[in-house]
Length: 406
Length: 173
Image (cartoon, rainbow over all chains, first blue to last red; front, top):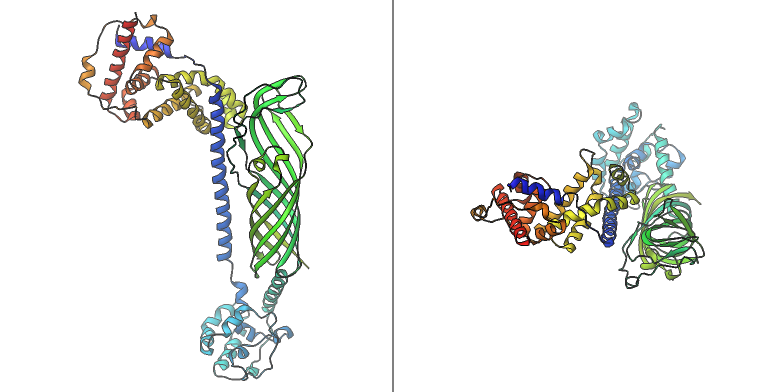
């Protein structure tokens, strides 16, 4: 026999050959795919959180400083004709030592932070900051004809000349200053008591302990006379990432304290293999998707230990009562998918503890991140889910908080 | 099968199962040829299907789907063999060339099971080259590239496998 003939004959015998395959291979494939999906979901989630954090950091770092520029003391000095502005301390007051001030002491209400910081510097350094060259930039935003005025006002300060000599003229840019003052006043108000509305989403982690209690059971098909339901759940189960969306109303009843009440929808999903018994028929060891739709009422108490115009950092604790509004089993394996809705479950109670941070983009709008640990009580009374396998869960709530004022 | 593949791309789990049912017997035979034992073949089959379903988006419809899938399973089997250091491809060529015989062997009288049993007894490296060259139709150049050896080594291993099989067939008669 020639070499080629041998090869051809062997190829003919082997090509198209088939071998029986153990059912466990398909189960292994499903488990492997579920593992891969989990890994992909984890990385997507991680990247999303990292991106959100990067955006947040970017917003903080690149936040425009124009509002602070309005609080420059030289501008205030030059633009003090209105009654409100006259109540503000002048640069002269800030710079002169106690007792040397010609003007009477005035309340420090709404004084811009920048002003106080500048006042701590020596007079000469302030004078340097208010040289004509540096003044030109902000003043170009207003009428050029009035540029000279602030320069003249500052020079006497350096020479210890009385402030009363200044003859400031009303300017259109007063409005910007008023806006700034209003902004800060509003920020201070929002940092204190009031109401806020939160719109949020949650992601829970998917870690779980090994399932051991199901693994030793020997398979026996349920009788056809059994009531409609799912039987013989396979120990291998693939859970999807749990997620929630909700709204909440927070009431800040003290500077540091707030209480919140909400309404939250949660979706828990899993895929497993089990038996389904319907009306006189049975689908043994078939693919089943389970979607649990929960509606919950969370109540939380917050204590803010950092509460500034921009940031609020708080710890919170609270409880939640959730109702399983629909427990939907989607049974594959027949010509048409079957939906089986399980009924009769009890409310699920849980308690949580977390640490959150809120960044106030404007006085009326903030973005927040509230990671927390939550424990679910008596999960054994509920349909199987990640919570029944591991009752202590970690979740991250992220959302927008609209400050509604008092 | 192409339609099932398209449905799998959409994430249809039932299509995945149907595709598995359609492909797995043939791919199991392929894995068994490469691995020699049923346990290892099933491991390779499982891993191959996970790879197939994960990478199914890369199948663009050029060529048959089964041919594309077959390459995945061959690659998976090779990966397993490399992991277990079963591919010791550093044999001397002279010895193998000296063993070549022109004597006829009645392959057509052999059954599939007998041939599979004989292939399973081949050394892993010779079995791999034999499968790749004779059944899958790889060239020696391609085999050398896949296995990281020289073309001469590939030829040598193939020849060794042929001779061994022919000897076994002779003894069986």
